[in-house]
Image (cartoon, rainbow, N blue to C red; front, side):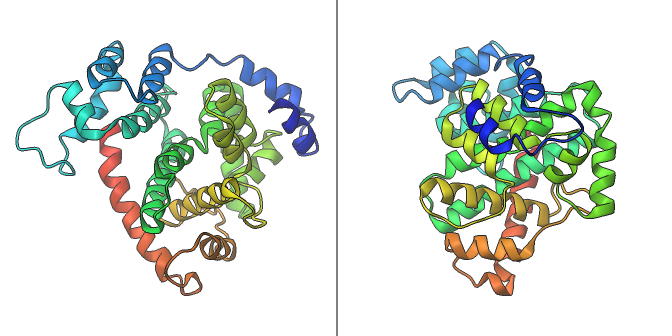
Length: 301
């Protein structure tokens, strides 16, 4: 991945920054938390049992709270309160548990949870909710993978905000978005010297999240050039999910541009059932995304 970044992005740094600065920043970050690493490994193991996963998660009780909240939500319609983590895992399902564990880790990454952190968190979860809605509507077989990728698409922003020096520059990023109607990645390159997709891809690689997820994070903010294979389709679905999340007002700073023409192209390319040129499908997907966000965000409060 480092070599790919060097070839593709060496010319896209500003303010005297280089890829070596970025790699140095990422290498200073801690690895994925040990409990999360073990838990994610178990969720990927078809032979693992809920009791095994519960024992790992309970080593960090804060990871258990959102799972119990979701299991006791109206979505599962339990007549009695679910108090056993093993039972909650059985109800929610291993794949969804993996996504919830990652979401919990992202939500609590920064001890300081100010307006900027809240905005970035809303963008993360909002995009994931839009991804779930789109995958269900289009019957895509990679719904869980896309949800996780959408959740992680702005991992780089979360990392940047955890660095005090860079965090102080983020007001200038949002001011530039407001003044020039730019997106996050463009404004970050102008102010900080590099953008969050680059950071996120390197962190995802460090965490061992797989090449497909790393590449989707790296390229989701690039201009859409068509679909030539399944990975291109996944990136297109991710771009569409992040756009719909922003249209729904989730994690969208004042002045942030949303390219409706590109969203229409993406919608046509992935096969949305309604005519995206009329934008009615976007309105319905936005509504469903807001409803799902309201339901899921409470688990991480």
